[in-house]
Each structure stands twice: as structure tokens, then as C-alpha cells.
Amino acid sequence: MEHKVYLDRNENNYGPAPLCFEVLKKADYSKLSCYTKVFSSGVKSILSERLAKEVNLPENRVLLGYGAEDLLKQAILCYLGKDEKLLIPAYSWWYYKELASEVGGKNLEYPLDEGADSFHYNFKKLIDLYKKEKPKAVLISSPNNPTGNSISLSDLTKLLAELRESIVIFDQAYAFDGFNDHLETLLKDNPNLILIRTFSKYYALAGLRIGFALIGENIQKLSRLTNRYLGFNRISEEVAIAALDSPEYYRSISYKMKKDKEVYYSELGKLNGFKIFKSDANFILIKIPKEIYKKLKEFMNGKGLIIKFMNEELLNSHLRITIGTEEQNLAVVNAIKEFAENRRL
Ligand SMILES: Cc1ncc(COP(=O)(O)O)c(C=O)c1O
Picture 1 (cartoon, rainbow, N blue to C red):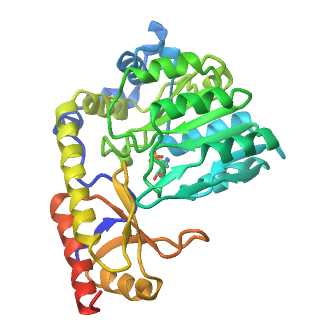
Picture 2 (picture 1 turned 135 degrees about the vertical axis):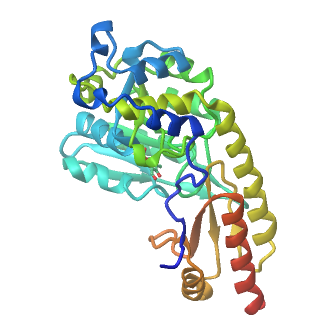
């Protein structure tokens, strides 16, 4: 079978830190037969305990789930009732659009503005819509998928101050910066905040299915819903901790990915009709001329280079390319350049 390179789902193709494989090799198989006893020390998991230390929060403010997807779903299940409103970004991960309907709620989209080289949240429009519609919950994503833009801490702080009447779900699945001190302050100041992160992207452990939420003090109902009294996957917890124990590995691949992003900007930015959006995530969004869309898709598929050709109402002439390994990125950039040269773009 022809070898295909998948750069369409925002996975991290560098793979997890070597220590994660060591943990699997040395796994204590007796753990497979027995539930954890960690609850006797007053915490729900060795992983939530470890994450709490990383962010300097009490353990009961760290929730675990089967990926960020699962925590988003549980948060909506917990807080959104029938006919209640959820505000989501107009350009966003397709699954956001499904969430409200899963509980009979209503989606309302707030706009993002397209700037010269990046998308931006339009805070004024968001807040106006918020005041008018009084939603039960607001979803914000930073960096946002697929636009790649993020919100600065000062903008986020100001925004959260305006959204105090609702539950705010802040999806940071694409945080590529490890942990910083500001998370603790943010959660202290915003009792209705649910900040969601994952091991899928930065930590290259999408197949492990572990996400976590850091919560403000009013989010106890979600804490009860997500709690698992018989514990979580004991082997996965250890793999995730091995990832947390490997900061240098992750810093180095994250650095390589940042450098490779520059190659996309410099090489593809030269092509006629291509607009490359600035991204803080492990993917980039590119607007291309509509007339080459179908042909480019066939060309890339023919080379086994699978990138995402967006097919949404607002983004229908756009590609989203996951930043892969150096070699994969070069293959994608060269293929697109070859296509463009043949067409004299
Ligand atoms: C914005 C966003 N949030 C959350 C997720 C889900 O990640 P996880 O693998 O942790 O479920 C994704 C997956 O692509 C995503 O794009």
C-alpha cells in the first residue's frame, strides 16, 4: 500500500517523548486487573494530582476526561438545558456546532474578523451579542481551530469580566506553551470558568485519549459528573505523567514546528492568490484561489499527502495543513510549489 502522510487532523507527528514508550515497556501488568487505590489519599487520580502541582491548584480543581472532546461534551451536558443558548465562534472546530443540539440547546455564532494576515476575535460584537442573548454558556477557543489565532491574556481577562453571568468554556486544546502561572490567577478570578486542555496535541498523545479541565470554584456540578469513583485508565495516567516529565523533548519539537511554520509562510506566501493566516497552533489555514481547489486536492491526494480541504459555509476555499515533521512539511511545501509552477501561479 502506498505510504500516506496524514496532515489533516492536527495530530503531532513527531510522536510522544521516549519516556512514554519506556513506561509502556515497563508497565506493571497487575495494574490491569486492579482498580487504583489512590482515592484513599483523597485525590481522584495520580494524574490529576500531578497536574494540580503543575498549575498550583488544589487537586479538586483538576478534572479528567477521555480527551478534550469528552470534557466539552460533559460540560455542555452538565450546564446547557433544553432551548438554552450556547455562544460559539463562527469559525470553529466543526464539533462545536454539534454540542448544543446534543442536549436540545441552541447555537449562536459570534463573528471573528478576517484581518490582513490573521483572524481576530471581535470582542465588541461578542459582548453585544452576549448582552442581547444572555446565553447560558460561552465557548471560546485559543488558539482557535481552524483559524489559528489566539487571545492575549490581557484581552482574555477583560473579556471574562464581561461574561460573568454565564459558564465560560475556554478550549486550549492547541496550547503549545506548557503551563504558566497565569492559569492559577485566571481561575481564581473567574469562578465560572472551565479551562480545557488535552494530551492530544502538544504532548502527541491523541490516541491515549486524555484531556483535562481546570475549573473555577463554582464548577462543582461538572466535577461530580466527571468523577469516576473506580478511577481512570491506570496505564494511560502513567504515560501522561511521563509526558509531563519530558519538558525538554516537547520544547524541542515545538521549536522545530515553529520554525517549519515559517517555511510555509515564506514559500507558499509567494504564490499568487495564496493567503496564509498567522497561526499560534500546530496547523495553518491557507486561502487559495477557488478555481484550483479541486485540482490541487487531486494532486495532493495523488502524492499521498493528505491535508484538509475545508468545506464549510464560511471557509470553502481554504486548506488547513497540520504542521508535521520537518520532512513531511518539506514534502507538502514542495508539492504545492510544483503544482503552482505547473499552473504558473
Ligand atoms: C479545538 C479543538 N478542541 C478539542 C479537540 C479535541 O481534542 P481531544 O483529542 O483532546 O479530544 C480538538 C480536536 O481536534 C480541537 O480541534
